Figure 1 (cartoon, rainbow, N blue to C red):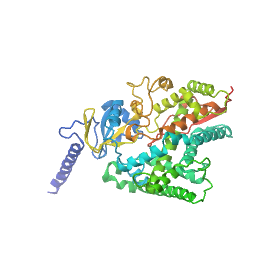
Figure 2: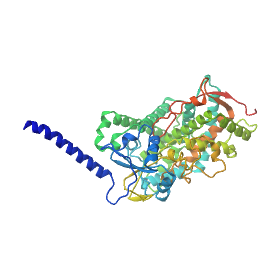
Figure 3: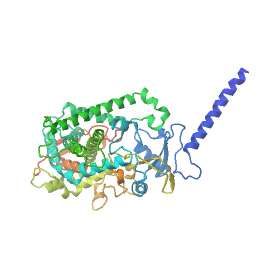
Figure 4: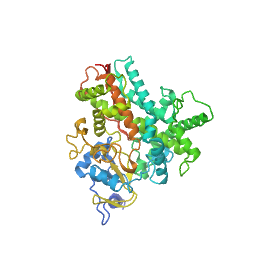
Length: 511
């Protein structure tokens, strides 16, 4: 009898396993009467998570070449449609923009950004509409962006002086660009003069930690039954600690602004140097006077400033870093850009924002860099709010939608020689990054598109023009263009993995 039991137990276990696999396939596979997008084979429980890899924009592009530009993958228990074509992006972000305007819930932003009360991660609804309206009208309007022109011009000039006066033969240009973005955003957002103080360096470190956590696989987001792993591997503890650090920092910022209203001025506070309020001042004024149709909570102010810092520093410096990296790989293109800047500057020692409109090649270089290296290659995920059809396929409510802007910008059907860095492709063309051309969407499009494009471009264009006017950049001795490392860091924002080290020689605008 015992020997029979030894045979029965493995047999029953095998049968139960087959039943489990069958039910899994039934739950996640095609329902009766449904036409789902093509999908790669998946494993039970984990689905296709093993195929996503460290660099999802690259691995998902490779899968889409095999299974189609509209592809269904299963991220654990989460069905996700991967969009890798301009037609698919147009359908999601224009034709059915409202249906796909929700954001999926995620542990990291939910805890760090006050239940996702910000703009980027908030669920679609009245709160998001009101907060976005405040940001677009009060914080990121063209008038407001122009009001901070003096900050951009002053801080970019200070960066030029810092490079020129550096005692080192090698310049860490990546650090310089991050510092520039921090300088500008600190002054615009909270009225602080950034000079490497411990408090601001601490904030920089916190955002770095957020970026690392965003690139860390979180089982609980995809397989609820495995959320306990986050407690064991320390993920939950890191997130909770980071949320506490951010909250303490923003609380200090808000209290200092309230104290200022009472006449107590912080020594780092420079917001009144030309009479312009910073973004925290504006949000607190809205809160006080109840200028909006809903109550602006203090946590909402903190969440919005979190977005302003994150988007204003990380993506802005990343875009500049990749642009300069490509220019170093293509010295002829850099020379052509320098000649344009020099011609526009004439005998002037400084470039101003008024000069930028006369620099079409500069704008083309930045556009091409954003095509080849979109800072957020997968944009931020969306979520279907109802059952619908996309390009003939059934998409169920709750399905996650990931738009691979990186893959679309490298589609050979849309772009000639897509892997070449060629700014000329943007000359004499109406293609722009404002969300109307779906073959080129580095900032997204539709309701959930980035509202800070004008601010980011104002910084990037001015900084690049001043760098080209003032310096000749070369790679370190012994490093050729082919040797330049182009590897990436993982995360929401994809930075260059290794810092960009260059030799900078001052050049006179008269030569």
